[in-house]
Length: 296
Image 1 (cartoon, rainbow, N blue to C red):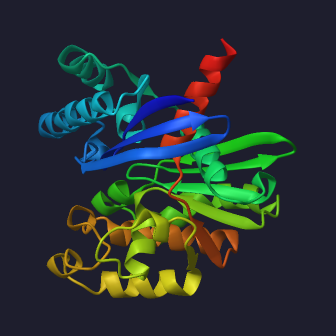
Image 2 (cartoon, one colour; image 1 turned 180 degrees about the vertical axis):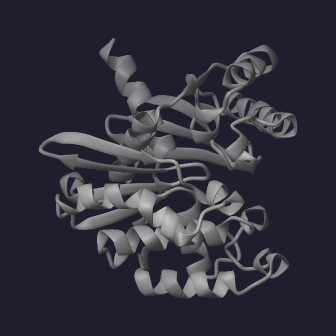
């Protein structure tokens, strides 16, 4: 058994997972989340100084938490916002100089694959019959197995990017449609969702005053629920959304866009149910980190 720490530097949030990994089992020891909105103004492809500072501060706290938890290895990965930034090198250098942390920037393919590994590890579903979708802040990833090969697609559309616009449903659908058509040919039986948008929708659907991972993990979001949640949330002003049970106030400005993306995907793939997974890219990175170390 090995205790691993994984930090995911996302477009909207920075997340920490400390887990004990043994074989194919990833047991959560500790989680933490900070919404730093590193990708604000994502259309400019520049990481803004204030956002960088918020993110570095969160990384410093999470490094301390991981060290206190006794991790044998700490891995930091960056996704869409870091991947696309014209000043990516400066950000990576800042993190290295201030915190002595190396950030591994994942490609869209790697991000999708890690999400798939995490999701299928955490749910009792046949991996061959599953499509995993990760609706992030800056991008949306799809992953599935086809003829024994793990395939993935990364689409530059996420909750932050769509909120900042200009994106309407027609434009979003046009970007997503080629992936839908590719996946539909495989006739996958199950759709699994990971990431902050889908876990938030599961929490809001259950009116969770306090977030409970056990009640979110495996929750079946039905398409009718998603339609009703979208109409309800879109009909509120921002301050009202910030008071919705299950919805983090810092996510209130992007949840409508995120919900639109989820609904578009469910309709496009002809799926009536999306099963929510708390096991995601963090778990996938933790598992593959240990397994790759064992092979050396």
